[in-house]
Length: 329
Image 1 (cartoon, rainbow, N blue to C red):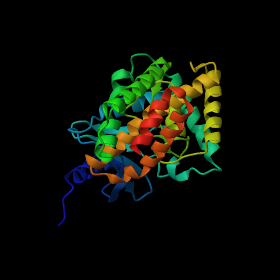
Image 2 (cartoon, one colour):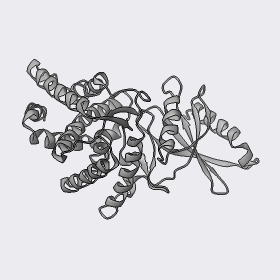
Image 3 (cartoon, rainbow, N blue to C red):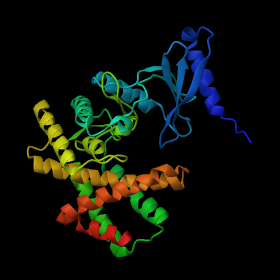
Image 4 (cartoon, one colour):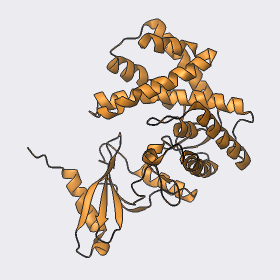
């Protein structure tokens, strides 16, 4: 049985209308470019002469294109390479974008090129952070931090592990949440991409191209750099992560960004911020599987459990989380 993809057909027809001058009646291919963990889909409209464009399909009853359009403009103004919005139909949920290519950092990274590619990503991140202006983006506040972390007990523990936390375990987890929130909110606030990881960075010129920025906020200065270096889909030796984090910290200091004066203080904030993100992502990956029927992300949950174990074991204050993870395992 063939199921009609009504939105795909509508997106293709809309793209044909937008590209009418370039097409001059010639056919073009319309193929999947990528999909993400949301309800958005991306299509590549490829012309016979080699040019290509990206069509974002964001169902308006599920997604709002306006933050993407606004943040894209902010990133471009900051000197960051992001897709240019060539045309938009917010009522239908369609955007026509420039195409940054097919080579993601996640696919291209290897031990030999990682220092160069992460160096480029760090430079772009610094430009984004230096552009920070108060009041331009929503705050990464306590409510949002807690809403994210609460996905861990609800979806990862409850739905995926099928376990109910005892009152003592709930109390332990709440003590950890409180520490992580306090650490995050004590950090200087800058623009935060919120998913600045190799899957959302493209190898292109100028490098990198940056994608999936529509959820940007203003919040903890360590958030994006820990997202980059302790990624959902690829891991590195701790020595390299420490070195790259130190290089970012040194560049940020020289650029005048408000990072901690002492690297040990910065590193602790980096690790604790990463732990908040890892607990969140464990919950998100479980939710994507059980609610949205996308099981592939669950394969990467052991990486986040490992990250969480390593960090919680390094800090006496986080010992309750180490015990909890042991008990859940």
